[in-house]
Image 1 (tube, helix red, strand yellow):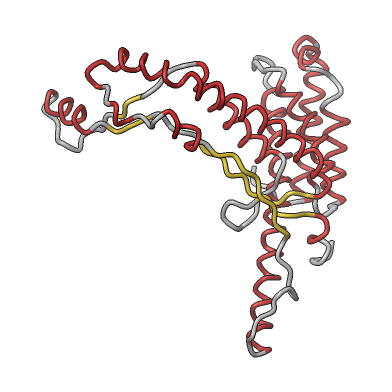
Image 2 (cartoon, helix red, strand yellow):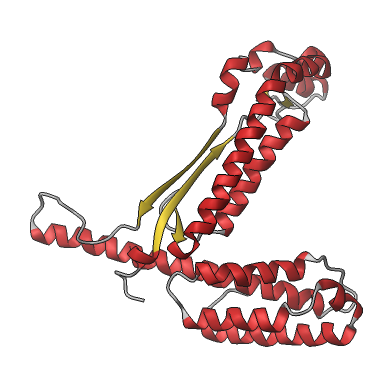
Length: 287
């Protein structure tokens, strides 16, 4: 793939998601505990859990799930906060984010409605450690949470309209080209690493006849081989060849079959080992 084509095959995406932590450092309690134990004033810190409740945990879980899905469906990029989103994965990614945003909004509304009740329960639970000042006003709570997704094109040389001497402008554009090349290489290294790590996990678990493994061992490999049809941003033929090898060689049997059929388990472990060797020859992946 040429450098120019990365600008049409991918874009940059940034997920900004945050929640109220419901934790607060309590200096008074910290000093009391350290003094009671005869410890130095900096021996420890006491952080209070300000709330406990299903609605609060629910919105925090959606936030965590969103981060997980964001990283799974995008690739590494060198700029802080930005990830590379292949255009082939645009539809799936944006549909996923819309669904997660809907879940986040609904969970947040339920929590905000429940917040006054949870605060009163915290007053009883924390007893002498309760401080009203630790809690935002009910009308301020929703602003403590954020969910946004921003998109940007991959930087390209030739896009600059700067009043600089040509030599300096050339240096700026060369720097952008170099940065994009390095970042694209890192993105592909990440996707190779994901595939390698998944195959290695299967090899390690299946090669030990006594090892216990979950259904996710096979399901993760199956899901990844499907996702890689959209994440191979440079159209790397070696990556596609390895993807097909993993799909055809390691995901044909479900986990239960591999648990009960020792011969199939050993054969799959051997196949995984062969794929790892082939991957190491095709791309330098850390084992």
